[in-house]
Amino acid sequence: MLIRKPSEIPPSQITSKSDYMNRRKFMAGAAALGAAALTADRLKNIAAPREAVHAATKLTTVPSKYSTTGVTPTTFEDITTYNNFYEFGTGKSDPSHNAWRLKTNPWTVKVDGEVKSKKEFDIDALMKMHPLEERIYRHRCVEAWSMVIPWVGYSLSEFIKQCEPLSSAKYVQFLSFDDPKEEPEIFSVNLDWPYSEGLRMDEAMHPLTLLTFGLYGQTLPNQDGAPVRIVLPWKYGYKSAKSLVHIRFVKSQPRTTWNEASPQMYGFYSNVNPDVDTVPWSQKYERVIGAPFWKARQATLLFNGYGDQVADLYKGMNLRTNY
Ligand SMILES: Nc1nc2c(c(=O)[nH]1)N[C@H]1C(S)=C(S)[C@@H](COP(=O)(O)O)O[C@H]1N2
Ligand SMILES: [Mo]
Image 1 (cartoon, rainbow, N blue to C red):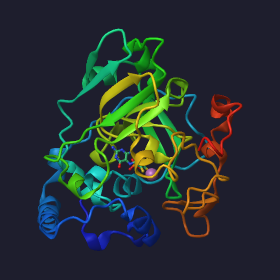
Image 2: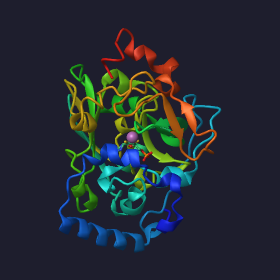
Image 3: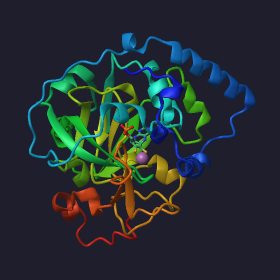
Image 4: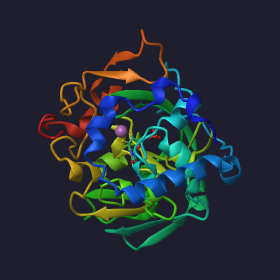
């Protein structure tokens, strides 16, 4: 893990004012006492020997036909220090400072709902269920910035088969770990925890939907959602829930965190679409993290460029009303 002094954080990684303004309203007016405790805690965290806590493990991968070619991955540094993981604070560098507290071993993922029988999967068993692939995907946040990330994982569909869902399962719900003992910053964010996301069954079964265990050939850094998360390259980043502990197969559309917080802004589908603005953000362009300024502004692509593979999922649907 990286340890950096605040002075070493380049300006590009400091939360821009608009990012801050737009999500600020979800922050509770934390009581002064709580805020002070949090600051003291943060100072403690900066002093902690993080490498000792989370030594990354190298992962063996096979190439994948689903990997995006012709794109240069964002640096490991940017991918692991410019994060959204509100359980560890809302600043872009907060997760890299705070997520060392998360204990990722032992770890189990519980599966229930509309399945033949309830199951629990140990993280080591999960990682061995199918050969791990390297999948280079474009990653697009609703805050109109983008990265290219070499993830490691396998298609979620492989896992879903092992879960033996019933025909009554129409949606899949993903729930993240939430425990203030390991995520004290969670208290300062006024969202309905645990973080919840959901997909229609056919979206979850799509081969591009990745059950993700690593990036850059090693286990996920905590701030990127260790030890297991979802990655969906054609949707805004918030659909990709991190640090999963519970997967439910359900009959109807599950609650999703950002939709619940602001339904006008964040729809259930959240497919990347340059023509549907996420008021107050325009989605016409994106800012490429780490790119020189003359290349940093890039036109947004419908389905983030994955239309050839995923457009069929939405055939006949109005993408404006089903945003
Ligand atoms: N549990 C949880 N999952 C989450 C989030 C979060 O705050 N909590 N943020 C989401 C958002 S907005 C984005 S853009 C991606 C960021 O993933 P990254 O930090 O690995 O780039 O994670 C998503 N998954
Ligand atoms: Mo995001």
